[in-house]
Length: 240
Image 1 (tube, helix red, strand yellow):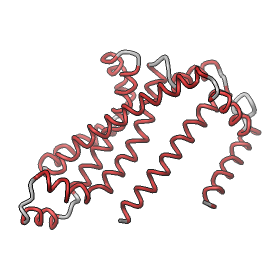
Image 2: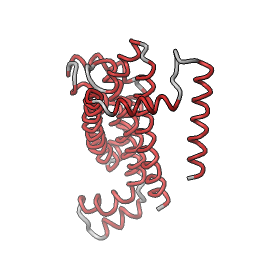
Image 3: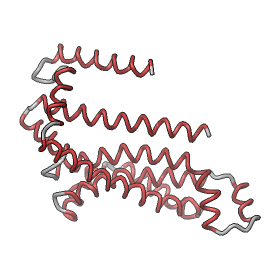
Image 4: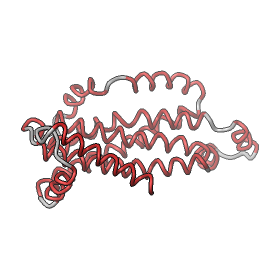
């Protein structure tokens, strides 16, 4: 707790120092940003943008997890499939996803489906890679024990593979969460007429510093809070 307070205090001090250096044309000070964010949260149009982003991100995250686990678990259970799939997934992960956005727009058009698709594209590959790696790291002794006990494939997956691979799988989910959020916001910035990403890009075009800072602060608080909680769970799973 003490370290967290020191970190927050230090970040606020740096923020205030940057404001004094850059001026009001580039930044707004911490207190004014918080007050303006409170004002935005009291307006109905801002909540429309916020809920739009929440819907897109929520659906994209579910798709990232379901599709990622749907690929990673079967690949991890099959040695040959894993050896083929791993370099393909790693190569796909290295591709800048922004180059795929014109294709996403052609397929889904401008709107909610495109944002969901672009968010899922960012998150699905790390979930799949970590799930596959987690399954491949399951001790062969456990698998031989399952065969000796004549467990079915589904029982082996549920009772042996899943608990043993869960720490690595959760690490993938944590990274997938962050990347899905980034992808969803990028989708809103470049191909949407609603959402926090669209609001942020509009504010940048109008050089509306208070809105830029307030929306950025809200996104940072949301991402940092959930990422911290997920990281704590991740560490607990790895210790266990």
